[in-house]
Length: 413
Image: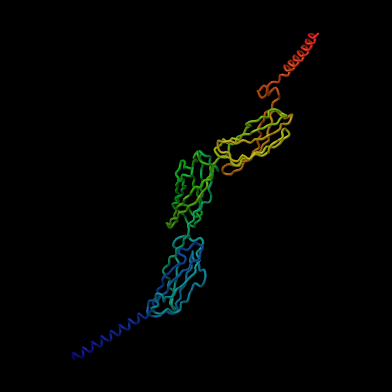
């Protein structure tokens, strides 16, 4: 009896194990699809660009998955660029995982007005005649690759800063990115010893809290030029620093030009002459004095003939450079016609450039004063003529000679 009971228990155990084994085999024979996001190219993608999105479809179950389909669900800012939204993957065998998994590729266009940051895309899948399963959204990174802050204009008032005087520099900045820029810093680097500029009533570094997409802002700097500054265009480094809305930092360097100088103060006058009367010839010298702070270059002087005088030398004199607080002279030989006015105007044309190569041309008329004989004696230019005294002396001498001869004849008699 006891043996029969033991045998019955053994049969029951074997039957139970067989049932469990059959049940376990039934479970593991089911397919189990796993869909994973692999990559986006490029990452990040710019608004208005095309992005390639890749997923892998794996079967981590032991049973095969037949007639597998996967579908891309377009939603703003993404639209399908090429291919079909639904892709047929066929049968994915059991344990088809890792490198054996099926790669799914979608080429997607990003709307040009897309907001930068993380945006979501959705997929759904199914197998056989089962209903669609919508997957959890996948994150796609959208961002302008290089946030761009452009210097659109630089204005210096006055256009040329006079040495020792002040001016204002206005810098116009524009946000060319699709999203705002934050903590914008602008800095004029005036630290170089070769720059004769210094900040006035302000610092060289200024900040702007934010600049919205497409917005234009201005930064103003007051500067003063050193009194000893040379006249030329100086290159001033401009440094920009800013953050995009995702916290990425950007640094940019640029150069702006600041012109330092002044309009030349060139004066002239008749320096010397030995021509004092009409109907005579001689030399005249015209002196050109640079009384300004900027140098004069390429000074050229032309004396033009008129009805009142003739030019006996070259009409043109090239004097070249005239430094600040220096002078040059132009020398001519002329003949003054009879009947010329007492204040004879010399018709001259001068051309020159300043230190910044701005060109100038002027018509000038230095005055040559002429005198008659009486006026020349009065001002000490000539000695007074004594014709009467000379005539009397001659008469006396002649009379004396005649009287002497008569006396000598009488003496002989």
